[in-house]
Every structure is written in C-alpha cells, then in structure tokens.
Image 1 (tube, rainbow, N blue to C red):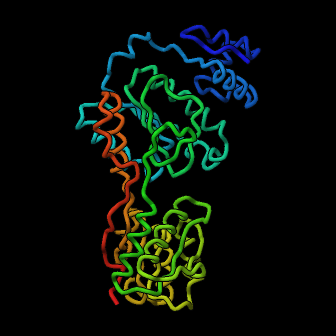
Image 2: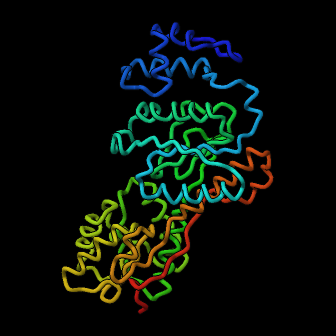
Image 3: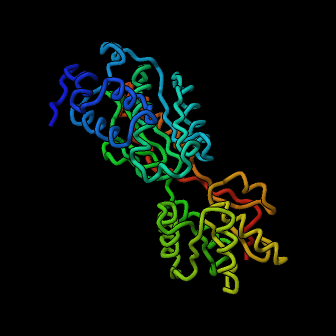
Length: 354
C-alpha cells in the first residue's frame, strides 16, 4: 500500500509514479478533465490519492488561518426546481451574517440527465475538482446542495474546511445533513383531510423505492393510527412523480368509494385534475384533492391546489447558520438548529369540507 502523506511529503509527481502514469494524467484527473482519461485510469489515480491522503497545495498553509468570510456552495444542478429556493435561503442568511457566497454548478443533470445517479465515478469526476476549487479560493465552509434526496458518496473531503450536505444523506456519517421532514409532511396532509371530514381517502404516490414515498407514507400511517383509521395498502397507487403518474393513478382509483385523493406531489395532482375534468368532474367539489411540494403548478391549477410546501429556503437558512457557527467556533449556538424541517400546509380551494 502507498505510504500515507505527512504534511507535503506526497506530491503530484509521487502520485504519477505510484500509478505508472504521467503527471499531466494525474493533473487531468484531479481537475476533472475526465474526457482525457479512461475510467480505469481515473479510478486507479483516485484510489492512490485516497490511500496516500494527498491534498493539492493550492495555497500556503497559513492562509487557512485567515477567514475570507466566504461560503462555497456546490450544487448538483441549478436547473432542478428544488435547488433555487435552497440557494435563496442560503444566500439571504449569508448576507445577514456578513458572508459572501461562491457557487459551483456541477451541471450533473444538464450534462448526463439521470445517467450519473448510479455511477459513482461520474459524480466524483465533477465533485473532486469542485472541492479543489473551493479550497483554492480559501472558502471558510462548503455547502453541498443535492437536487433530490439520495446518498452522496464523498470520496475526497475538503481539507480542514467545515462541510455540510443539504437535501441528501452523506455516505460519511460524520458529515451533517439537512433534510426535509417528509414524514411530518405526510402526517400534516392526512390530518388536514381528516379535519375536513374525509375518511375515504385514496393515495397516489411516487415510485415505492423513493425515500420521499416511503417517508411521506410513514407520516400518513402515523396520522391514521392516531385517529384510529386502518391503513389499506389497496388504496395506495404507486406511479411516477409527474402528471402522467397522477392521471394513471386516478384511473386506478376510479370506481373506489373515495371522497378525497392525497397526492404525494403537485405534478401528480395536476394529472388527477386532468382525469377528472375529462370526465366532467370538478376537483374540489366532486372530489377533494391535496398535493405536496408547492410547485408552481399548484397555484396555476383551477381551483388552486391545497398543498404541503417543501421547506427549501428554511433548509438553506439552517445549513448556512450551522456552518457559519462552525467556522466561527460557535457550536453552542447551533444546538437548537433543526436538521430536519417540514413546511406548513397551504390551504387553497381544492379540498371541500364534508
């Protein structure tokens, strides 16, 4: 096994020698120029980097002791609808606390669509150089923002820089994660329908393997247990998280004796609206509908959709407060910061009291 680095003992030249490749090849790997190296070479170089503990020496060590009042933000992709509200909450809090923000957009979806999700090497090819850039400009802390809830593998952690993940879990349990409280959200949505008199409620969920599906359904079951209602799996239709999924799910529910449908996303709810309207039925009157997300479609639908919003700005706010406290050695001030946050239900016109 290659020797572990002590201070600056391991250089890029050493990494190249240990891998049997050129210095330029190692440089390409470390700087994310993966189009110039094969997957096999990339993985070989990264393995040696991890084993030796090599860290690029972008700045003199004494610069780390000087605060730049800057937070680095690495996002999986700015095109994902959930990302912008998190960034907005983060930037607002950073401004309040006197910090600047530098954003690195990895464009994972824009470049590879969903192809990177099950390919660890593709993620690391973008993440490693992004972290290196943040180290190079001497940020005080780094916030990683995911586009959806999943497990993020961190092969190379920042060098002595506080690091936190938002909207996902880390494979490294020592890295804090700020996430949505989907279980509480599901609980809130069911309790609201129950308070409006509904007892016969159909549910249209996303894919059964999705953590959002699992946690929101867990919250619904918790609420049903509290009010003494039995959970009936036959009333849950697993579909996709889009309009088509809602349309098909409503088709499956047709004929069942229900007064309301609980949709685990607003896009699912939009499909329910279409299905009902094609059959000359009125959402909110002939069948009550509740959504989840507070997606922009929720207020464009008619009648406007009652929904449980994603507490995305609040996640950005909480993560920023935590990491700045960490940067300033004020960990005691972070003890009441929630790591899991749920939104408050927004009541509109799509649920009728019965």
